[in-house]
Image 1 (spheres, helix red, strand yellow):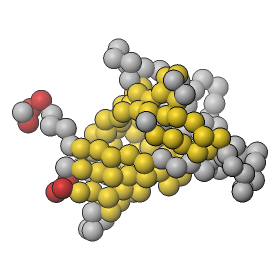
Image 2: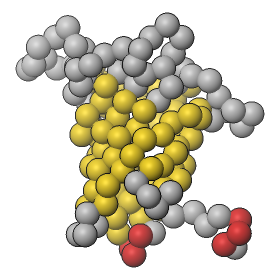
Image 3: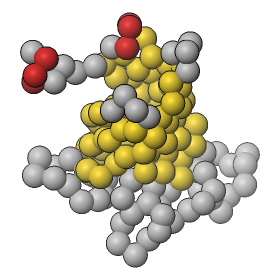
Amino acid sequence: MKTILVIPPSTQPPATGVAFGQAGVSMMHFGGTGHFTQVDFTIVNGVPSPGATNENGFREGQMRTYTVNPDCTGSAEIDFPPPPGVTPGQRIHLKFVIGDNGKQIHAVVSGLFRPGETNPTPAVIRSDGVKVKQRSER
């Protein structure tokens, strides 16, 4: 379980913000050419995040670009499909470090843009991932 601190956009720092619990899992597929796709399932305060889901209950349609530097640091942006009547959808900027010869990724959110907003919402979010072998690799 991770706790995320979000400061409402109508409040100027140093507001204390609103802390809420969020848990989630995601699977990212890096294409090797600077583009990736992602599926995820997240729960915020015990309620699944909104958005269209596939037959397994995971949100799809998340995609964007990434860059990996020679020192194994990198950055990425994720675009989420917008909810009905809202443009743009949620967008997340990430900074990451790749470890264990490309088998691990450790990331922090460097910018969180909620649906319909053009200014980032301050948030503290981190994630860790491991490479999952595709069925053809097993």
